[in-house]
Image (tube, rainbow, N blue to C red; front, side):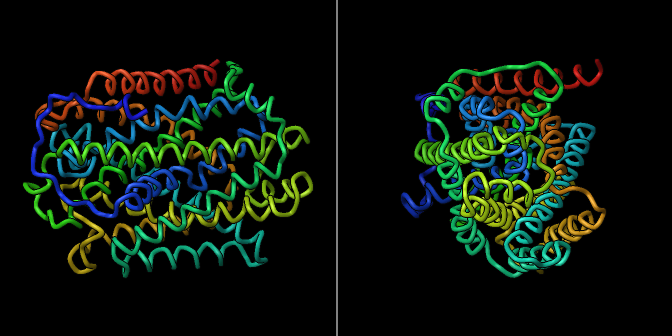
Length: 435
């Protein structure tokens, strides 16, 4: 996979190598943060619904999505690392406002909806473990998350995110407890079974949308900038460019994170596809129902593992979304914001984080179904992915942005193919709706 995104060997380093530190722990840890955030409660709901509705026959989606996930996150990471600014700051520098503002509005709205749905998912999952009112859980979870964002440091948040990511291994255990037939698992993984009805295409688009979510691009590009600020590169001039060694580390980061994310999505589909689908429970109405349904089929441990995974990754993903929304807004209007800045140094940035958190909480009092909202948010993300991915591919091939670090041939082939697939998938879904 690393070979697919290797850059031209003749490119000269743009600056002297910088120390990023941390060795293997940093490489795995930083990549895992993005990968785990990609498997947020929205993704868990989508993949669990796919497994319940279509069974093991949907397992093929995981290996198909892996190269797409790698190339998309890699180009967003390289964009932030080489240009020295986050995604929407680059869009603002290179494109007219009529292009910028709709994209910012779409990404911001998506982040708010996703954060709200994920808080609802946390509430439903905790309610399964502890019989407390879901609204109270949502408010408490949001308050804890916001407190860490406003009062904690970037280093603290990064360390917490690394540990929270481990909660996703609960789905590997849950799938093992389901005791699926290995031969059937292998067959459905390697041999796609395609259908062209609205239900099937809706789920395909939802899986593409949630695995290639726009907030992941924003987070990854800005995480690269935050990492460089942490190394003392405070000015744009100091952050511009990237060495061969730095890009190699970025490729390892992305590959580790996306492989982790892809393995988890595979086991989520496997756990519900091997249990709920054969039992005729093809419609999941809530996180609590999905977890509770696993208990008689795979044992009580599966129920608690499913709920634990939602809670753990929810506490990781919600701050990624609310912070991503803040990055979108401040960069869209030409301002700066960083998790390295103190509260008084970036008032607008932290105010947007607080506002998005409050709105996300309030949306949970409108009475929507958390699991259904999670799946629909994935479909919404699926429609927002193609135009943003198109711009990222254009920018990473723009020498005024990337200098000599424009995409290599393999990256372009895979990146443009991914862009085409996302456009075709959403167009196909739209056609089925019209017909």
